[in-house]
Length: 130
Length: 415
Image 1 (cartoon, rainbow over the protein chains, first blue to last red):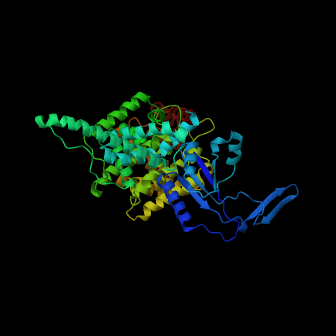
Image 2 (image 1 turned 60 degrees about the vertical axis):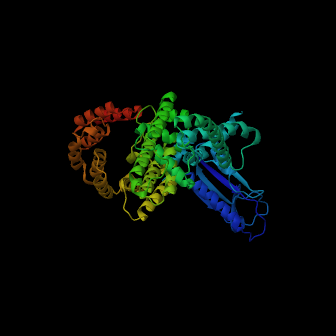
């Protein structure tokens, strides 16, 4: 079963923050461990939100707001997509993330087509894959 | 102990057991003693971790406990041997201590040695499968029995016998020199693919697929690709398994019945696994030594994966790849698959000629796909009665219930 580990880093607010070489090396070692264990499917790191945008949907239409977002407390910094045998195993891999104090990793199971009821599967089946 | 705590420890075990065992086997004198030590460490973890929490580095913790047990055991043995020695000197039976002087191997090399051992050609294929699931995938005997639709005592006995066979033959725990590695790796890859296929198209029972077996095979394949990055066939097999696994949710209809490749809803194919499969195939090709049998099968699977619709399939290329496969790994099953591709590329008449030539192959005598393919070709040529008889014959040969139903329905449609 697939899980996404969402990294919510506790990074300082200043704009040009960069991780230390040690922190990067620790993360690379961790990624390598995931690969060697045969569980890593994909991973990505995200640019900070101040270069991003937020698109929200309201009664009167769509609003686009460019970053930075003062109100945002928990910001996703990246993710790992892993293929493991159980929820417990996913949590165990998350425990091993070399997180800094204040970092949070959220573990979420990925929906698979068979998790959906038949009518939802049928609706999804009407569209060609990208 | 609460269930969540036990499950958390089992999850750690699943991750750590193969490496732990591999590291211990080199020093403890084989996998039998290594497994005993690893079990001791697991028991200690089950006692301590629920109270104290899972340690920061559980793998190192387990290894340290196991090593301590090994030292205790060696000490006890020395005391015993000293006592026996006093007797032995009189009887001239003195033996050297049995501690191994083998140097520390790379952790990766130990793991590879473990996988090579569980797939050793000395063992029956059934024994290789069970032992690989147990030691290299870290499954419990109960999980293996469930996965292989066997009874637990039977699996336990199969594993005990396999370990005894290896111990009696004094098979060394090592990665053989490059010259001898080829045939040993071939056995490893065959065991993995057998495991994958048993999950992908269950040969017996009510379920058409058992995804957890596919998952175990694919995972071990990905591990092997990291252990042996310069072996093109490892990447070829991983590519084949990734691409086949990408179709798993499209292979079952609403009632769990099998859906054949060309009838599948391709929007349900898993694009991520296809991308991974194509990347693994590229790694195999980039090594520049040509593709082996698994690499060629992956290349064929890739032709299907790249086609947006069944009608877009490049059948000429698939026939060419089957030609290459027939050259390096000829088999009646490959010839039958080639015939299917020939039918798509050049029409049913040309294919029927090939299939008729295979009818006397002893290996295909009880193979349900031979009459199934023949039935399909006859139906396309408008020979309905002969087609129906072939589908019925195919239905009588398969041991899978779902497949039998599909073939009987096909027979009814042909009439």
